[in-house]
Image 1: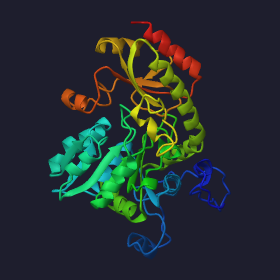
Image 2: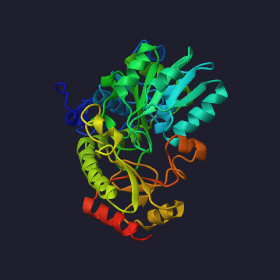
Image 3: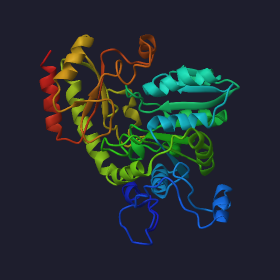
Image 4: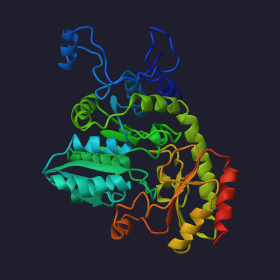
Length: 393
């Protein structure tokens, strides 16, 4: 087919492999660990990089390759690497580009396991990490050292939905010849494409919206062809955090409906956020789709819409928050996001428990913060469930 710049068409057709043998419409699932060579010379040539073809599914697989090409096109980048988990994407992107003596700058608030990797694991191997408030880009400039190699951030930030200025941060990185990495999980390429603003590497927890059905854990790293090749042949090949072909097959199926799912997620979340903002038992609502949110000014500039995740503060103590969560019926108490089902969780005790209390507060994550992933159910039913749970305390 001809190339298309429309995300809805890309989600269905980009990177498609034609099944010349049988003409299968659906992507074939190559559920195999290894691949047969015609002869010893062909095997040697593939290992030497002198001949194209597959060797072993940890090193590459046709089903996985189609997923990589599709997401790369959707992100507007040259290539992609599929990983076993979202944290496989984070660790693969970082470990391939850092070594002992290097310095990394990260936003203060990030996903809890990303924070743990950077603050607890990387420092064990002589990599220095500085966490800064990136809502003020000058803080990044102040933190840059001669050995700074990477600037890492999420936007919107998990879990408090702070929106960062991608273009300003990318410009700082380029000015100082530093690699920039953005976690784009919350918005997906349907709503935000960081490469357009100069970002070098974009990562996803494909577990979330890209798959969208709560039955896969996976990740994706997008970047230049050279960068992705380096990540694949170092961190991913040798550590082994590569995606299974079956998971890639499921995600390819999920991505076909990603644009229409994101539209419904966004519409439902907007209605829910507006409902919560006027409720007397809710103190603060964090959702960029609200005019009261600092990130609202970025809608239409760097992001098409605000996404399907909302955070808010319950007026009361931590026990009230626990009671509220327990009283929900339609919502599932679970720590993922981006599924068809609406999910609810308590970041301080769940996803962001790797932070100390002091670190959480410094990152803007209070004990009373609740995070919801608004699903695809009828929005009136979602709001009714929140209403009955809020009446319970």
